[in-house]
Image (cartoon, rainbow, N blue to C red; front, side, top):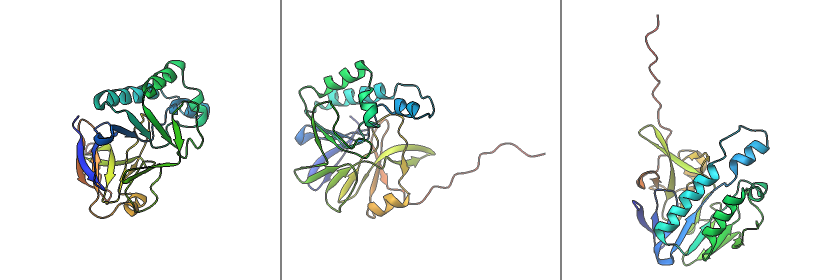
Length: 229
């Protein structure tokens, strides 16, 4: 799976290249910030008309991760839908696809700031969930072993931005799993304040790649545009 294995409070976890977290001992897959229906919500509010394929792309990735890990338990860490209207407006084929992925699995929706109330998709709906030594919630709160999302962290390597996990001894922040999601560079003050010195950024992509969490904005070289006259 080209994942990166690590332990948090004694739990052996794997950061997957897709941005999902796998806990093999629990047969558990955790994802954050799917933002299903984002293109519909932006169009409804008069924004740019984005190609309406982001939900399918996200479900394809989730389907592949569930197949590869054989997870029987799933935790979605909030902002699973871009808003409640977007949840209700999913095309029927996408709604049925999601219900198929949920079938036979212990599925928990953690409530986020975009989806503050339960939606009609089954599963359980919670503000947070304690499981073994770990707490799962949407937004990082306390200096305890916790797994959260919300910030959509990303880091730059070789001039390219990658969504990333952020990991220290007390917490893990997951990247946004959904397509069409932006992000916050991990040198931003909000993330530097949350993560302790020595934290790692685990970049997503073809493989999960750990690196020291960047805390200084990288210098961008000006692009050469030719000699002036």
